[in-house]
Structure formats: C-alpha cells, structure tokens
Image (cartoon, rainbow, N blue to C red; front, side, top):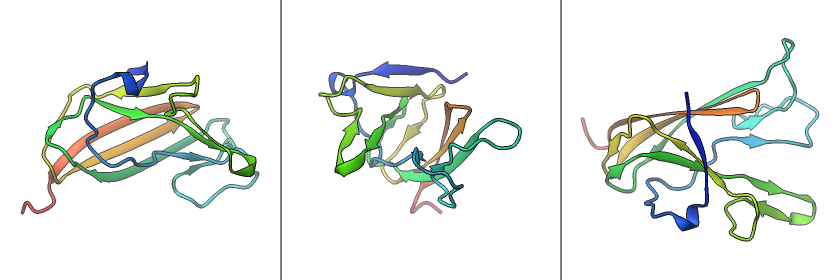
Length: 135
C-alpha cells in the first residue's frame, strides 16, 4: 500500500533529487477525450472507472537516497490566475508518497517514475537505472 503524507515542504529539511516534473495534468473544462499522454480526461470509461498511467525518466542531480516523492497541485484559472499548493500563502499544502525501499542514486542516474491515477487515487513506483554514461 502506498503511504501518502500531508506535508509543508518549506518546513522540512530536504534535498531535491531531480528537476521538477509534471506527473499528471487534468483538464477540468474539457468535454472531449484528449490525446495528450499526460492529460487525464475526467470522463469515465464505459465500466464507470477512470485510469491513467504515465511513465517517464528523470535524471538524478544529487547523490543521495530517495525516501519520498513530493507533489502538489497548480490550478490555472481564468484571467491567468495561478493557485499553487506549493505557495506558502495557500492554505492547501503538499503531499509526499513515501518510497518503501528508498533506493540510492548517484548524480546522472536515471530514475524511472511510473505514476498511476485510478479512481482519484495516486500510486507511484520508482526504480533506478545506472548512470547515463555507464555501459
């Protein structure tokens, strides 16, 4: 079972391991299925469930151990207004998915991220490949 924890990132000692990346994108205004692989259509499939999987690689920027994947939401509203839960002024906070096996990474390692969204629940699997320049 994946363990999600509500956090306030600005209060925690942490080391970013990768550049920020987008796990998923939701189109709350769309009424047509999208071909964008990151975009989650909020339309249900015929059996009444919604499911989306997004797999990608990120590159380690630090040599460390991965203990959690932190995520937050950004809402782009009418008129260019952005509501971001990473903003300390927002009453919503961030969340972290704890990584059970806490893999070690070296600078340049590929981190494989498999993010799943099924019926409004997130799950994340993380694994590590060797460095880009390893044979």
